[in-house]
Length: 253
Image (tube, rainbow, N blue to C red):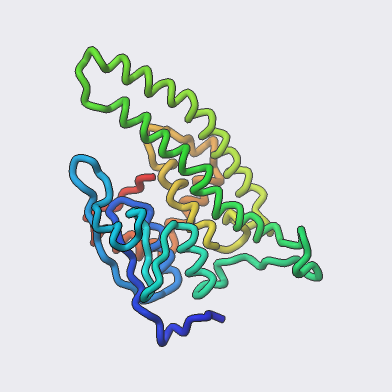
């Protein structure tokens, strides 16, 4: 049972930065059917950075940030964990194997996958994608023609690191889906969890990035998984709200 009574819930505000990881928090709020408000922030022209106004909400000044009354939550995984613990216990796998409650190594496979992926998304997967974006930006930077061979070489050297590592991660995720508990089609079993929501942004970003040219035939389960995520009604509602906010829906890791 939630420790917060929905009938007496403080105002929930999602501090929304355009084209940011706040997308998946919006999806979670829709999945949980929680009442919420959105406060919009525009990226600064030229730098594409978040505006300084976000620092008045949280000192780091990054998105997503969620406020619940006087409580301020930052970092995607913390926000997902907090909301699911209070309002969506069904999005958290059962923790203990029968008879092993409280024992070391007594946790279920589903739960350990869930906890791992909550850290893996931002700790291992997203930094690689951001490195890929840096390489792409260097390659396409508007520089004089005599500088372009240098920027192209730098971009190529970065991609020599990114592409093999990206293949390792995508192969890992394909294997995770192939071995999903109970023959499930989600990462932690046969139902949606907070880990699927936290992983959605980088996975969909990679699969939709034409410059990376990820092949559906090579990762059939990963593509099928991505298709399934996007069919959910709460996901569709979130996309509709994003389009209303920004005029389009763009997945940008």
